[in-house]
Length: 210
Image 1 (cartoon, rainbow, N blue to C red):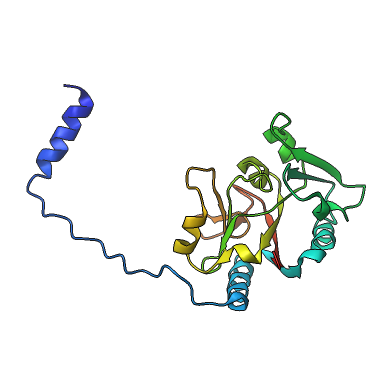
Image 2: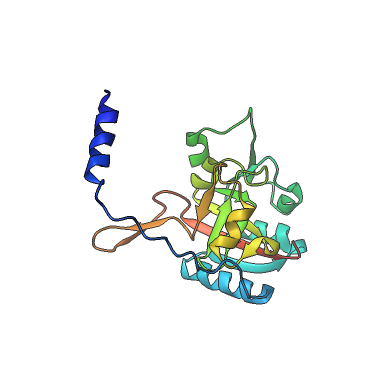
């Protein structure tokens, strides 16, 4: 008998006379009753509460808003599938890096880059959570976690109210990144520290008509 079998055998013996676990109630909400405007308002409220910058814009405004958000940046990295038109207003003084299979930036290289621009897969208004799923317009997890400034483009059509509405839109075996505001944590004295395990600054462009 292996050690694993012995341990599991002892657990089974210890639980032999335990009462059967009751059925877990599944009566939670699975669908939203909010219209588009209410979803936008709720998501903006949650993101602002998390200290993220938020702009509700039209698709035609994306290039200028991206340029405005990156006004102080010296360099930017993007996934290979990002719409190049979204970067068309960036000045030539900002160095551009495309992270693509076969030409991926190292962690040290990403750490030296000022900002990252990505799209997103699904956003949950109730919790203020933006989810990236590794699609070509979002890229691998490292590029959205290492640079200090993340500009994230969120199509309004991808916003849902509840977690149970978001899950069917995702392939859970993919490398998902769940973002609820800029990276932040606090110590035992509740001193807030930002940028510990992700971007210190998060700017969200919530785009109508997409």
